[in-house]
Image (cartoon, rainbow, N blue to C red; front, side, top):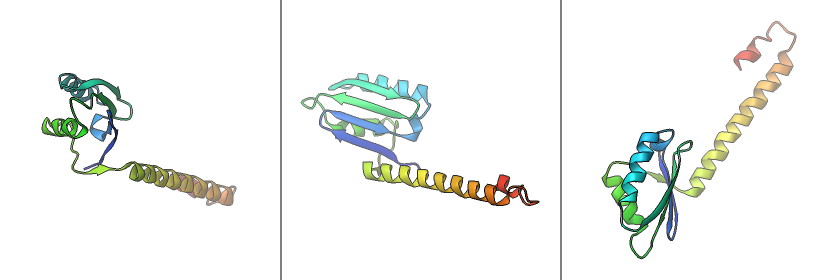
Length: 124
């Protein structure tokens, strides 16, 4: 299962989960559910990346209560979460692999250009 990302500061909670990515129905259900929770002040969703920002009144509810309620309702699985540092490291690793592949492909394309093996650069 893909990891969920959770980041919080007092009064604000950000959740990013692949289940919400491009899933308008799920986001609508989750935000509707959160709007009924005591202490939840507002929610802002980003369907494109599957992110939800929840602003809450710290005197009324807690981050743990919100997460517990979301998990209890089956909206997300927080048993396998990723930290901010892990999220950044993952993004950098993916970008590095992409750049390496592009540079390697470009180098092969230049080296094989005009030779009978030039079709190989298309595969690489």
